[in-house]
Image (cartoon, rainbow, N blue to C red; front, side, top):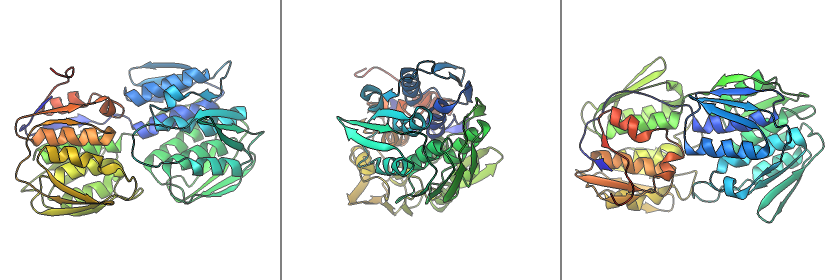
Amino acid sequence: MIEGGARLSGTVRASGAKNSVLKLMAASIMSEGECRIGNAPDIADVRTMVEVLRHIGLEVGYSDGDLNIGPASEPNVEAPYHLVQRMRASVEVLGPLIARYGRARVAMPGGCNLGARQIDMHMRGLAQMGATMTVSHGFVEAEAGRLEGTHVYLDFASMGATENLMMAAVLARGATVIENAAKEPEIGDLAEFLSKMGARISGAGTSTIEIEGTDALSGASHDAVGDRIEAGTLLLAGAITRGEVTVEGIDPGFLDIVLDKMVEAGCGVERAGDGISVWVPAGIRGIELSTLPYPGFPTDLQPQMLALLATAEGTSFVTENIFENRFMVVDELNRLGADVKTRDHHAIVRGVRSLSGAPVTAADLRAGAALVLAGLVADGATEVYEIEHIDRGYERFEEKLSSLGAAIRRAPAGQ
């Protein structure tokens, strides 16, 4: 429930990165000792991954942002459908299970309905390392002796495939090279955690990652990096309300292209230490924008940027190159008075003078955040439904926005 019109102002802290913590949790499967993962956000996806790890047999405790994960005494190498269908990142346990136990049975993944995000590259890479891979009755089943190091070239710089294969390779015999690897900061964070556990990895964050396999991994303690997508969302919330917002707990370098595009659209930006400040000195103007793998503009911030550009002066052109269904938010933005038209993977956004509050429904995680941002600036009241999507990736979202001055609250549907 949002009453639009409040200008956001103040400082807020980004939580730990969802897209890092989930993979750090998967990596802990391979440890022979206890692991601590700090700066872990209390979000639905992390709670789901806790259930996945407990189903596998690991001991998992969570308190005050710390995950304490102990090895399984009686491992169960299956990740069941009722858990995996909630969250695509569950498939990241595939590589660690094969590497540690020589077999795995993982349900085909779910998560946001953003189009065809197949795991062919995960499976092909693991097969190149010696695993026998089959798909049967909705499950990926794998068996292997010890995996063998190999040379893998990814058809697309997939973040998930890069992480899954990198994790599997650390316990393989010999050297593995991953070419056309994804470069996201979260991959560097995973490599740092694995290195603390005893892995030998070089090149994480570049297009070529080299791993020298080792016989075993020990426990380790690691704090996850800040969530660049949450930070970008909060900065865009400040911009759409023409406010002044500072987000701490984030490396500004993670958001270079996003901040550059915000400046191009008329925002003022200041980077300082582990914080970023954004304000709007005059107005927002239309720009051209294309999503690309990191370090390009992230698809996970495209819907939120679309909301901002809906309030700009002039016309914007947005091209979505990652997920074909990422424009599912458009119809709901238009219900709020935006003027957005799509054709294939392009959107034409004609800025309007004002948005108007209305009931809208979140189709996925980032669409939900974008609708909240639009509601912050819309005239009157906006109700955003199916906020369980938002809860998958944002910790205390309404509380953080409220601390910045937003008139926002959570309520049972229909109240």
